[in-house]
Image (cartoon, rainbow, N blue to C red; front, side, top):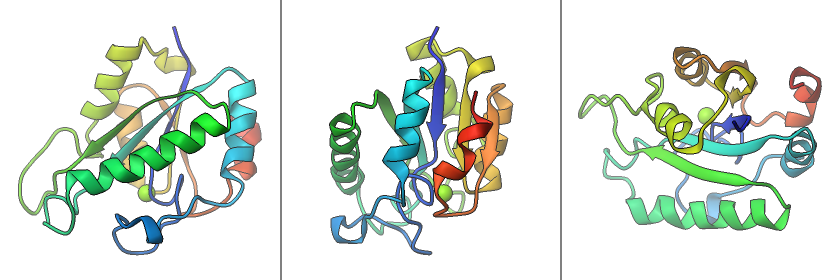
Length: 160
Ligand SMILES: [Mg+2]
């Protein structure tokens, strides 16, 4: 079974701007991201990104905008020899409809765990929001809460 580090997107993979990020020009990887992920990769971890994109439900942007950024992210992981298994995003927002995929619910994680045969007891979720950690706890994955946009090199020793 695979051990995985689940990553929230905004505030962890890319800089949280305090507003929705969907334009390529607004998209910026967080500091030292690939250095830290390289360290995790050497410890045997692969990666899955789990992101709420409620801006779709709000009509601010579309699926194609999310997919465009997904392509940029996937290419950069590949350039750094990191195994990114998948990117799951929830297009829903509680102002408009209920969804079990949107964090703090855990359907996106459950789908990944099922599809990729993930060893939850040896996996982690890194997020900058309490709802990231709550979603992880629902499926038995350890959550690591960080401050938005902080360098993941600070938590290298928290992941064995
Ligand atoms: Mg976030």
